[in-house]
Image 1 (cartoon, rainbow, N blue to C red):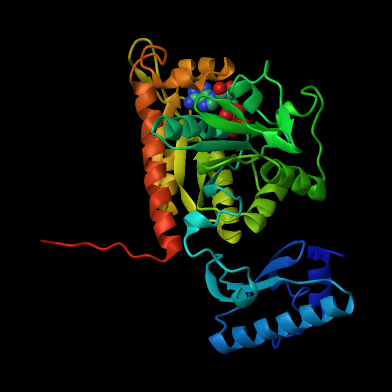
Image 2: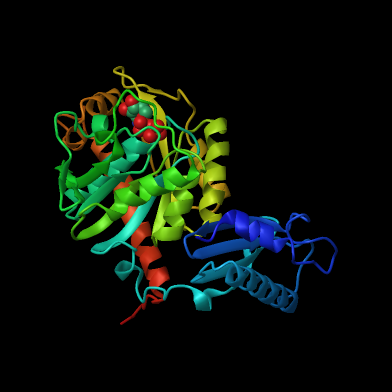
Length: 381
Ligand code: ADP
């Protein structure tokens, strides 16, 4: 039997807290994620717990879960316990000794052979242009000379077949492996090419987990500098599976300027933080509209996502205006047209998309550096 969230929750009822009640019914068990033989949990204790109290409780949790798992023949490879503050900040981490060896360099250990680094593109809300940003980020990085892959993990509503113009292409499978489509200078895989486009895709948790896993595991990616994962909107099963099975360099959040979109984006940011995925920054999409008269119209407002990024102390990666040419090129499945001023309605759109890509690249480089533990050196002559 694999390790499950239910098993962890049931078992932790046995752990009594010094302040009264058990770990689960007291609400101290803030979050659990389990898959196959690995589990991570977050504990939130009231007040300001000291280092020793956290260490003792982590040891008790570890012993209790391992004893119960042993009795039920459930193998455990990794059990991580983290203590978080009320705001979700990590106070202490335990159990890393049991984790799979961390990569010496994040570039060498994405979790997919041949893939140097993985970034996710997420949004709190659907329809904010998350897939559009993911596609154009892939195209821009590929145009800058990188070898790029794009995985459509929006398994509930895959939109890459339309955005990349895959309708007339057939999915090829060789030796049981999916051959990614090579389009617009990068490789792409989407469930949208394997299911009936008119049927609703309804996945329960374990099925969503399996569908996503198959997409990245069974694809012949070859050598990639960057794999971009286009996540489903919101905070569901796919990000959880992703964060447990792959080592991400970070996540990009797409948000429109309105308050409601920002609120959901903040939740997405918190989710990534809880999953241990660094947020590389925020992109404001549909930021304003420049009419044929040359005037700028703030249809959804402007700058809201940038302010949100500032509030959360996250890098702002750039703004993409509402642009009818971008919409038309997306509907036509031809993102390449967004990068040539002749087919992009001028310089503004390519400039905006390239700025987002350049800023994202810089944040990826910084994050890779941080993950590798290397410190930049500055020499002054
Ligand atoms: P999501 O992935 O967040 O659900 P999509 O990327 O599928 O959103 O975009 C939803 C729709 O909005 C698409 O038709 C897309 O072409 C359009 N769109 C996205 N960003 C822009 C933009 N900046 N200007 C004009 N249309 C846009």
